[in-house]
Structure formats: structure tokens, C-alpha cells
Length: 409
Ligand code: NDP
Image (spheres, rainbow, N blue to C red):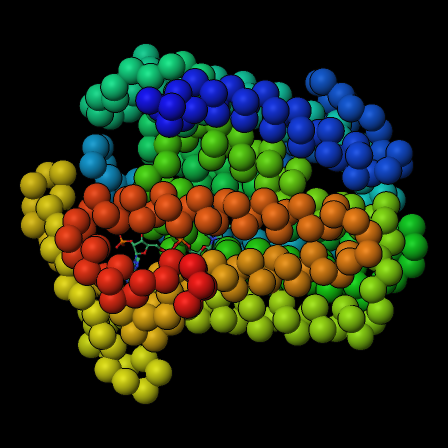
């Protein structure tokens, strides 16, 4: 009863009001009086930034390129995506770097009006989420019937899983073609802004470089992303769409943004240690994801760590009443803990945050947030797997008892 009240009536309004305003407040505070102040609607200049980025993202999905079909959903046809993430990423980064070489003032200006840019993102995202809610309720694109819920909850959660808008998949656009690329471009911009203000700083370089490697890896693996919880399970609403249109540009970039106004104090050797720790974490995170992919591609007939892969054969029934089989890996990295990939994801984030050590909590806010997000995600993912695999999932949990950190949790 209490859980339902929190889930449907308390959590969503608190999030929508608190976090929506909070992102802008944080940007003003993190700018330490060197940016414009809080703004409700943004400025014409800020709107131009947002419109240009949105148009660029849309354009990348409109241009003819290879189509990728996501997993078959319970309702409606398989979602269609554009498989041109690497090209989009490379062209965007090259354009950003070339543009900044010719006009470095642009970086300082972007930093200065950042709270206004977030205001424009906020208005755009809220209007878009209202549109998605109305369309999902009045003119859904599938025949799926959802039990009625409080309207704020529906707004927060979203109505449809794979809606399309202007001929593109809404989640591919908001996550990959706006949020993630905004994160990358802003990290470069804040690095240049920091350089102009304080001169070259190796710690800021490490911070920008590690984030860039991480984002490049995301685009390299973009089609793999279409098989994750966010895409196959979450609905397009405030949580995902506002999250990627505002929270990713505004909060995921916060460490870089914060370091513009707060020059790092860490030494070159300290920053070098962070760089090494970050690179090793990226490699290990990739390794864990790769082991699962490799194992599934080879249908379990493969070697991991020099031994034949071990697994549990899990049968399940699809909503269309078809019997299928999945293999759950119980050796290699996946034999140590059920979400070891998240550990390295967190260590990577910690590495780029540590360059701001000595500057208070600001550089670590994203790390704290991600810890909460990923722990929450573990429970969401396990709820999904338990519903899908039933007793086979219990068997898997017995074989691999740790969720995140071997022998601890
Ligand atoms: P996982 O890669 O852990 O995938 C979970 C899914 O894999 C499960 O739902 C299940 O799906 C399948 N699975 C679970 N256990 C096994 C097993 N033992 N053997 C085979 N398949 C298994 O989770 P994510 O999709 O969340 O993460 C992917 C990457 O994205 C990670 O590197 C993660 O760190 C990163 N990430 C980053 C975030 C960020 O904001 N920075 C947020 C979330 C993720 P099935 O139904 O196919 O069986």
C-alpha cells in the first residue's frame, strides 16, 4: 500500500518538480557567479543552440542509411532504428573541434549561457513529454491496453514503448542523437572554456578524455543499446525523454562544467593515475559486456578464461505463447557477480571525478547519482529477468549469488 502510494502518487510529482528545477539551479551554483542566472524560458541564443542540435540529430536519422530492427516487442511491429551512430559521432566531434579551433570564444559563451540553454531544453522536453502522453492516451500506435494510473505517473513513466515522431524512433532520437551527443560536445566545449580561463590543465584534459572515450564506446555499440532495459522495457515519457533531453546534457556533464569555474588542484601525476584507472575500467567494462555478447553469439559453445563456458539453459514463454530458450552464463566475469559491468562503469566515473578532488562534492555528484541509478537498475533488471525466466532465474541466482561486488553485495 505504502509502496504503491510512493510509486504512483509521491515519487513522480516530486521528481518532476524537484529534478526539473534542480538541474538548472545546480548549473547556476556550479558556475560560481560566472554564468548567467536562473531562467524560466531561456534566451533566443539558447533556443538557437537547442534547435540546431535537435535538427542535427533529426537529420542524422533522416539521411538514408542502414536500418536496424530491434527485438520484437509484445505489441506492435519490431522497432526500426538507423545504424549510423559511428558516422554521426565522428562527424559531430570533428565539426565541434574544427568549429572551436576557429572560434574559441564560442566555448566561453556556451559556458556563460549554460543555465539558459538548460531552460530551453527543459521547456522543449516538458512540452514534448506532454505531447507523448496525450498521443499515447488518445492515439496510441499499438493495440496495447494499459491499466489506468494517476496522470502524473503516466507522464513520468510514459505511455508507449516505441513511439515514432517525424519519421524517427523517439528513444533513438532523445537518447542517442540529442542526450549522448550533447554530453560529448559539451565536454569538449567546457574543456576549451577551462583552457581559455586558466590555461592548459592536464587534470581537465583527463576528465574530458575519459568521458569522450566512454561516449565514443557508446556510439560504437549503439545497436547493442537497442537491446537494453531502457529500450525494450521503459516507456517514452519524462523518465527517459526528459532525462536525455535535459538531465544528460545538464547533469552528466556536471564534473566538466564545475571544473571550468573551479580549477583542479590535483597534480599531473595524480591526474595520470586517474587516467590509468579510467582506461583500465573502460577496458574491463567492455570485457564484461563482450563476454556476454560473445557467449550468446556462439550459443554457449565457446571458451572463456581458457575454459568451456558454463551456463544455465532457461526456457520461457513469450507473450505470443511461443516457447523459447535463452542461455544464462555462469562462468567468466558473469560467474563472479550478476552485474560486474556496473562496478567498472562506476570506477570509470570515479576516475574522471577524482581529478576534482579537493574541490568539494561538486565533481563527485554524477558519481553518487550513478551509484544510486545502477543499484536501482539492478533491482529493475532482476525483476524483469525473474518474470521472464522464473525458476531458471532462481537457479542462476543460486549459482552466482552476488549482485554487484563479489563476496560483498
Ligand atoms: P546488462 O548488460 O547487465 O544486461 C542485462 C540483461 O542481460 C538481462 O536483462 C538479461 O537479458 C541478460 N542477462 C543477465 N544475466 C545474464 C547472463 N548471466 N548471461 C546472459 N545474459 C544475461 O545491463 P545493461 O543493459 O543495463 O548495461 C549494458 C551496459 O551499459 C553496461 O556496460 C552498463 O555499465 C552500461 N550502462 C550505463 C548506464 C549509464 O547511465 N552510464 C546506465 C545503464 C547501463 P535477457 O532478457 O536477454 O536474458
